[in-house]
Length: 405
Image 1 (cartoon, helix red, strand yellow):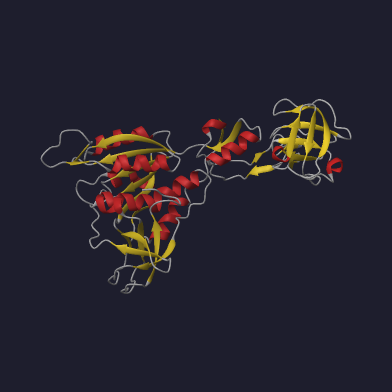
Image 2 (cartoon, helix red, strand yellow):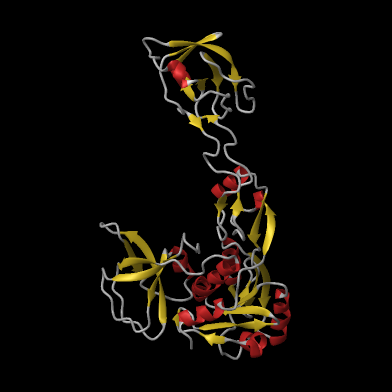
């Protein structure tokens, strides 16, 4: 039986980042750059006004004040998209608007509140230094500059920056394709009639949602019966995917067929020293990597956090580590056994500003409502001694970072 870290290392060693593909910029949100994004132009491409006002030569208004304004001759206007075609001479001014190109020989802008428009003249009531309210060419970035590095998970801000850099297409890693297959005669899809011994299947839909939230493309293969032939036929739908994830049937009972039917000689391991969950399979099924998760819904969710999410991140060229933080205990804990325990807990903030992790009194692997209300998992190492209120513990947050369960 492997420890959690050993199992994760074994799984991750089987995966590398997926090949790159080119996508139009509107489709790049949430994708991971496979190569740097490099500006195709300089921004701004010209010296531009940062304020509505008047473009002047600073030397012409060096003595201007509200009590003794300097009068300049108006020779034109420069607006965004409509630059003034001429150049600025001594004693002249050009009406200018934010973002408009600065006329040749102008070296400052006086904002309109400090000026009085008098038709073909303008009275300037404040002196300004050279460069005032001017955005020089290249202030933001220059052509050929690397703006976004390889491995960047693209945000809305990144998409806007790429657009400003005149990048209509980006090279990103292909999205992971993940087939999800639930198993068991006892489960039925939400909304279907339930037999006397059946429960509603939640694992597959939750896993598909998790895959999508992590940038992957999920293919829900449905529910396989507790029959080897039916299981094999349903699993064949994973052909062409990067990963097959099953739920249930991973233990060693008479009705658990995932290991025998899909693992075969390509099985790497089938048990991990963790709770919730212990039966966890990794191997290859018909050339497709197989991750077999437990059937209990909380065990499925926790195992997906620890093993599926890192795989999805690695396939997209992202760091695979789970986010952790330190917290103080809000309730005492008993000594742990020989398995790593991942306890569902709420997070609050103490008077000193530190997070407080309070585990739920009952940690049952079938209680989905507790997992849904949890803010974090408290990580209890094997053989951890009893812990008191206020003791420090390591937690994995369940929102933000790499996961949003």
